[in-house]
Length: 516
Image (tube, one colour):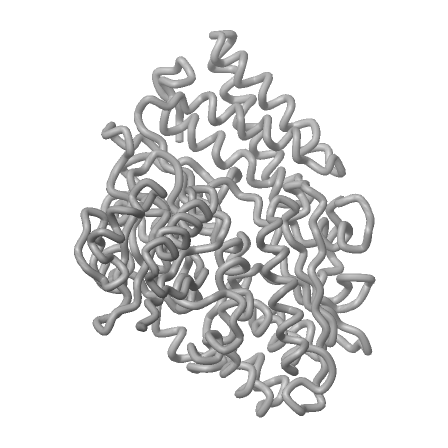
């Protein structure tokens, strides 16, 4: 009897949309009908509006169906979906779906395709090729590959990864560390979670290569406390890697040893800042450290430490496997390679897209996002999390590029894009930026601690019509003080969304116009 291979995602996004119920319904229906099936729990491909998306392996490739609800399962079996036959929920060959076809998936090449904790699947799809090549190179040669690729931090500051690694490599110390910042807390972001839940081995491989490059033998994944599924999958993958010689002593019969463990984060947004993260990892309260010294010189326990975001580390294996030129050929200007872009908010089609730098916001919002879910005009988008500027419609043609965004006083950040239609009150969003900062500030520096609270008060006065012209100036002066006087980006970037909302949407504040 033929066994039919069916893929049902197991990650938290799909589970929240009913994947577990669909899995159970398909399993029961197949048993009742005496149809032999093998169910593989893959990860979501990132088309969230089509979850739960079920795939069936056929001679022509995998065929997708979605969004599937448990009530759809009997009719799917009636129409023999397990043979890839047509049904009202048919989406055709998965790889031919426009959303996926128009992407450049490098870091996410395996996401949604493989079983996340199958080492066999991982290696069959080019897994650990980068590590095997790295083991044949010197430390400096590995760092040079990363530097030449143009890879920059995907967590916010966009600092060149190769320079950070070079600094740690050059730092004299018998002990060094690799720390993965997996405390993904920006609004509308989920790319780190998707890697950790759907392709954990690529992060593990990237961290091993990082350790090999700079001479570190210990790594930590500082994981967001709200990610229990990611924690379970990472720990399972780490255990599998250890049992198969990819972690621990003498990796792949080499002289290199590397240990890796997951640490649950403190539940504070500020711990996404690298020095606050290190304080928390050491068991202390998450307070921002003064710089210098930089973590690359004095990081975890005072030792040289590489602190990279999940996506930065997960991109390392393909760079070592395919070469720096292969990766650098994607993108534009100084923004090399690809970026996982997360579409969220008021859009018809939300989810994850991996594209080379250079695509515009308008293309993302309409070609991929399908426009607003309400059918109203998109009034503004916030890019780069709660500290990112609000961008109005006339800036939607800006290419997604670090330098181009800097020119309009915006940030790419972690690649999260949250869309708002024209029913939104931008003054409320601006006020919330200050409120968020007041709640999440570590409290160490005055501009952030006090400025955020004063900012809420000033916005309230402007909204109430009290000395508006004077208070607009006070708000802008306050913003300047926070930008230039705060210890870290928490206070330093909070004015970005506030001032952008004030400049581009003055009527929402009860103003006729403001000076930009």
